[in-house]
Length: 587
Image (tube, rainbow, N blue to C red; front, side, top):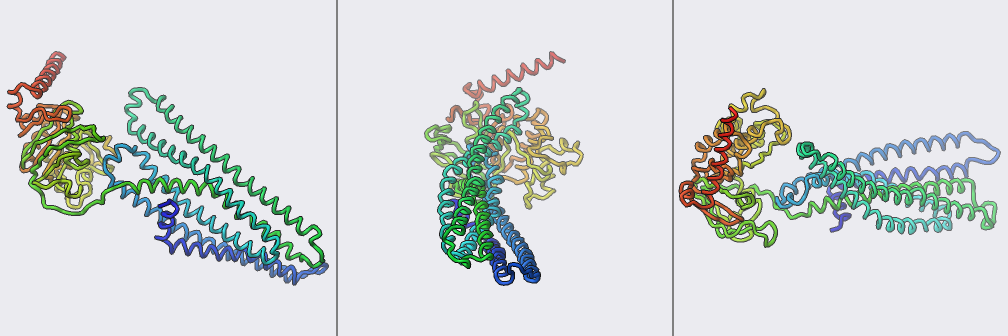
């Protein structure tokens, strides 16, 4: 479906505002165009050469003044109605766009910078609003005015009016030619705005790294390149707009007046009464009025194209394949997880997991270890259904997880990531995520269970301490404890710890380990850890290498085998001993 058709469909949702606004606008145009005809009548019937009659002149001025007031009031009402309709449309469009984002798969965000998505929700939808407010009203006024002027011209003189009709195909041809180039320019401009937003967002998030590695000049150069491209296409569009607006309209206006003067000033005037003073005045007024809407139409070509390109970008996002957020509830499952010959590839035929077979029984703790890129996090992505297996299947309590909605599967799962994300709000709201089912008491209990109470007590407002974006005012350990408490507050049947202890100090890690021993009872727990000392008591340790299972067993069993896990554990133990010896030497 074309963007124009879809924009029309949006307008029809709030047609009471749009239609009423356009109807009132039409009445105001008709009121405004009646003034020259009234002036013609007064001049021709009540004003004579050599005789000054004040009454008709006063009547004419009063009528003009009254029509001006009525026109102003009608234009105001029309503007308010169109603005309300446009704001409602954009409000609805932004909500649909944001809602669509919530349904998109994680893979979409892997390939789309956040800044570009933000630009579509904010900048592009705002450009669409301008279409309904500015472009629509201007086009409506202009076309109605032109229609009314042509009716008046035909009523006055059919020959001149017929000649004036040639302006319509000229204007249409120019619009087609303009759109051919403007559409391409605006497409690049909107894309570069999205790129600029993406780079700004990335720069702000990575400012610590940029300044630490002195990359300010490089980032400035990259930004300048994008900004210069954006400027160049804006300049091309400006050149096109300049050629379109005043130059074209002035040429047409002068040409029309030449025809007008020729017609009334040559031998075609065969009698004295061929044209009256009132008729002459009305022709001059209407021809002048004819070019005002033409100027308005031409000047809106640029905004029209910007809005259509922006709308197309919004619709591209809305057309992405998503999955409706399900509200289906299921009973809390036991937590028996089984991987059956599971293989997975982020890109076709490039498998990062190959033929995995293992199971985790209710209440067990499963540890996944391996070198970077071995597939540990990919297993968690599949279990949480951020992605689905390419081959094989994953079951929970014997149910294939792909047979249930993603939200339903995640209902009884909790996850703690290596880099915890905190939202703007308070510590309490970050634990409960404003879920009404999570009471303040539950929040306090969760924080206490993970040992966060003693860590957060030194904050001025306790658990009501304000948290800014990403929790940058809190330490890494505090953020991790809050994230851990968040997972526990939802009482998951399956708990996933994705290297959750890698960014915290030893003391905080000991608190979490103690909390885990208490809270994992009756809960299936998956742990991804680089510190092998933290998983010695796991019920099962799975050693991965390049997406394949190399070893499986308990800590003591794997050490006894002397294989990959034993070598990794020995290397970490030596490294830890060296660090300890170094610290003792310093002391």
